[in-house]
Length: 149
Image (cartoon, rainbow, N blue to C red; front, top):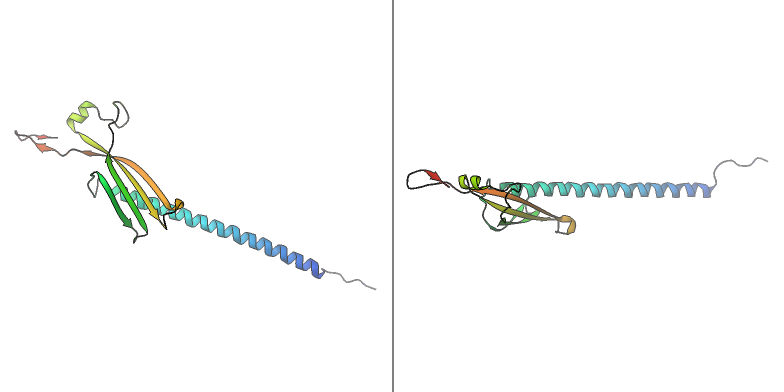
């Protein structure tokens, strides 16, 4: 008598269960990767929005102390900007103005701190950036008609 060759029903079922588990694991890994890509894309866009808001200060908008708020990308991003005078830099420090330079062209240094929120403003949806900007004092004519700071 010949014996049947092949796989038993139990062996086929075990193979399908292992295959389904592997495919499920692969789908979960791919979904996690897609979430990370989406998060990185959101972070990158947020940095661009924040840099754009900071870049307008001193070029498009005058720099003046205060607290300013705004929105970008159709209200998707909300930002708050704090502009305040920066404490005097010690003499000789990088960026410090020496007496001669201050006499020729006085400048005021401001600290700009921007906080950006998006998608609900959770801890992963916040960005904080800070920078320093200098503003030269406007030149004005003296009694003799010479332009002085």
